[in-house]
Length: 90
Image (cartoon, rainbow, N blue to C red; front, side):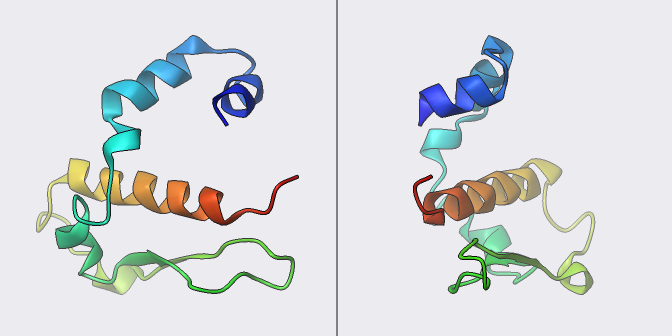
């Protein structure tokens, strides 16, 4: 997967460094639980008609200032990673 990621970023090492510095591989359901429990965003359990993962965002459940913006960012990154994991090979 790392080779795909680096190829997709035109071999930009900076993007890989960001993932490492941000701690993407360390994000878990538990680490984003407090923000995820708001229901402001989630990965849908089912795929769309083209077998792609679906992320749902509910803006009315987002209250700026309640959660640290970094925690919101962690939730977003976690959900994108979760969706990518649901993609079929190819």
